Image (cartoon, rainbow, N blue to C red; front, top):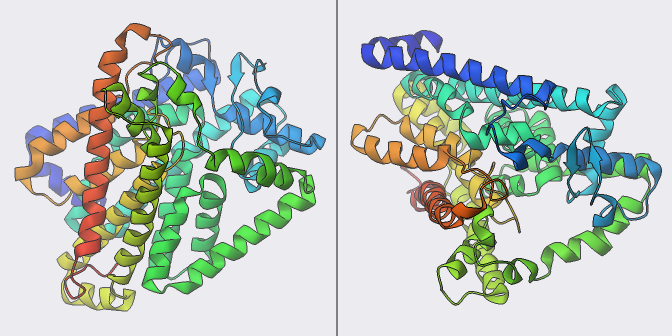
Length: 447
């Protein structure tokens, strides 16, 4: 694969030096971010000078919640337990995750009782997972398509949605990565490992469960059963370690709030939705533009979006040929096999990205990480006629504007930019998903 990548670069001498420069910049950028993770006083993070991102770490919520769970707190989803609390200079975020997720920060706390150490360790682990999985998928795709994909790594890993996701320690990037690892494991016929990866991702962020719907459509039952088994095991472990209190508070307190119509964002200033890249954020942006959109209408749109996404995932799965046919195709035509695997990876990331937007709130800071990866895969098919559009889409997805807290006067600019970025995200992922849904069975890649 690396030889193939060198061959691709050798065919374009001018691009070879550009890629080397991008690789050097990526290494330097990640080292600087690593320095910030070690010492937050060094203003060399993803967005230097931005006070909000310097003081915000999603990891604080995981750390605080796991400590509360070990203490036996009745309702660890009570926002009052997190508000106006800090740790190592970071404001503690609210915990909104299902109880099984408590296992992982608790495991980290068993390794070290210092938040600063865990913060650095999680940065290394999440970054390593992303780089390794990106490279592994490129190798799995194989051929020139995989080589081109590998060459996109320096640009994707330095995209601000990826860097900010890593900086804040949010599990979003890891959830996408684990879900993709699980799907590759499905194709390699390792259902147990696939189920574990998909269970960890789904048990934390829920949206990776859309890939289980795809697998059900494919009638790939083994990895689905394994996933359910691992989810049951995580649930049992949560009860054994923390008792039933986390589950009771989640089912009685947190879950109803997630499904309730939240009027608070609609009572905020008109441009509040600019930081939300989800479907509800899209409705808020339309409201800011003057369209008659309210919380009830947004909830109905979100429901229709959910139904369409689930139906699309089932149909895409049903349209998929069996893996043994893919292997036969590869044996007959290696190039077609490479294209088939490339389309498979594109479909996974498309449905993951679309499903993530269904969350009530997903910040623009890291929402575009999956879309950046997807765009790199789409760019790997080598169609030069699409290069200008790829470049414009990459620019829209690669950038994240400074936070509204640090620069409150740029809200109109933020509205315009985030709306464009969200439309690009939806068009990109939706287009790939629609192609999978409409593909004829005999012509569909054997994913």
